[in-house]
Amino acid sequence: MIDRAASYAGLRSVTLDGMAVKINGQAIFQRLVLDQGYYPDGIMTAPSDAALVADIELSMAAGFNGARLHQKVFEERFLYHADRLGYLVWGEFGDWGCRGYGPRHDHQQPGATYITQWLEALARDYSHPAIVGWCPLNETWQNMTDRTTVLDDVTRGMFLATKAMDLTRPVLDASGYSHRVAETDVYDCHDYTQDPDRFREHHSRVAQGEPYYNSAQGETWSLPYAGQPFFVSEFGGIWWNPNAKPGEDSWGYGERPKSLEEFYNRFERLCAALLDDPAMFGYCYTQLTDVYQEQNGIYTFTRGEKFDMARIRAAQQRPAAIEQEAVGSGQ
Image (cartoon, rainbow, N blue to C red; front, side):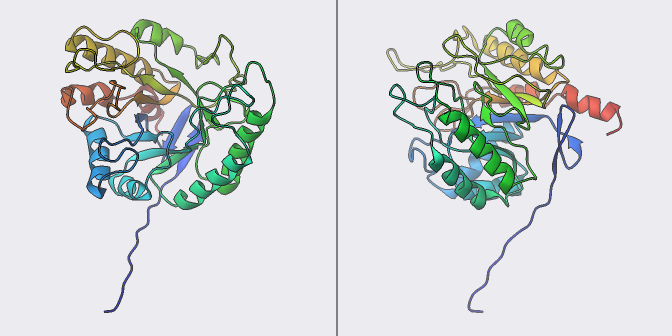
């Protein structure tokens, strides 16, 4: 034998049915985690193939069934392992800081190159069955002082380019803040409210067409919600780093829990608020690991355990309302 090549195939469908996103015809609540793909010994490059596998296995051990591959076009090898392990992922584009157009926002200007670069990522990753959705933009919002339509045009261009490339997966025009495409396949919001009761109240009226809207500088830029399948694609981010040294730069959302038990209680109740909602098809918890000063991961930056994983997993593995509704209706 001089040479040989091997490959693999995966078949699955992703369909929208009312408020549910179905995988192979079954309503599966997407228990996602935000994965930024950072490593202490490689920054945005994984140190080894084994490290890519380990991150998926750590996520699944904590009870997640997938991830938002956040603000980065991940290594294609990661997608191979996600295919192999049955791990659901949403593909994203790196659009750090894209919040408008004009002199106040010159660090990341949206333009036609966004669309062409995004098409390159789509062409590379289209055939990976692990990908169950596309989201080209994250937390974009309009420039308050320079209300041009450039970002609107780019958002619509990226959405339409994705739909032209791929009719088999749902497309989210932009995650959080500015939904600028009325016909976006799914709709979402980001909500880092730490009070579980208040958080539940925020998301109690999706079925009535009144979701929680993100705003910036006191203004909402999203087009009205049109009844699409809905999920909270960023929440939690609970600040917990009991081993922080005095004066160490550390950061997380809200007030740091005063005890480990308080962390568990908050985590369980935040997850429950979304799992209990029959109008919610999934969520994405922030985040898989600590990343430098961001001390809000389920694991440490070096991938060490911070919590009782059995308890974290149990909080997420309880049946979700949208899954029970599908079973009750015989779907």
